[in-house]
Length: 215
Image (cartoon, rainbow, N blue to C red; front, side, top):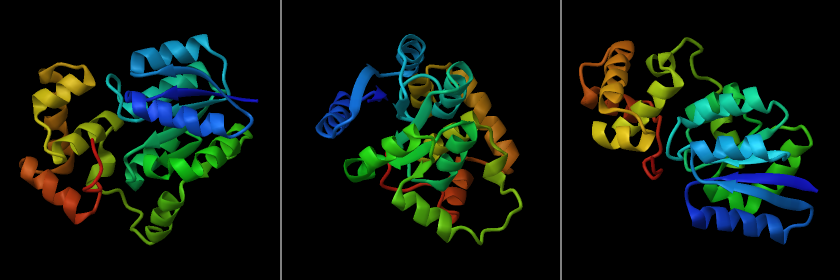
């Protein structure tokens, strides 16, 4: 029996994931969480094989959360389940310690196979993401400006490009407006951009973020 933990801030999403797993045989949903704080508490208190983790829950940055989880429970396999189909997020998630990356739109058809594979020690990438990786094999190897950003800065960068205000970003990340403003300043400096419009143009030019994806 594969024990699975669900971490997503949307009740309907957790209900859907639970239904998919319960409909298949060999899975047990051992606990649920809805933000970074409850996720850490759940991981610490519940033994499981796989954690399904949404990258965009309230609280800590999702990549930072993966790193903490792997530090505290190195044996727990993490399957990222997210709206973000961008390659940059997948790369950062795997570097942080994730064992799989699955977009929510693929969950209905790929979830059972993904959980089974990473629970047995494998690595899983959704078919959509695998195609993106293959298409970008010929990209230049030198670091691009956005690759200089820390995981937190990259998250703030994405939110700025999506049109969120500094106040909105601060609220969703549970940090002060001053902290977000500092991140924004560092982002502009590292990417050598004069303003937010430059960031938006850069993201569009390099196709970093999918227009249809929510933040």
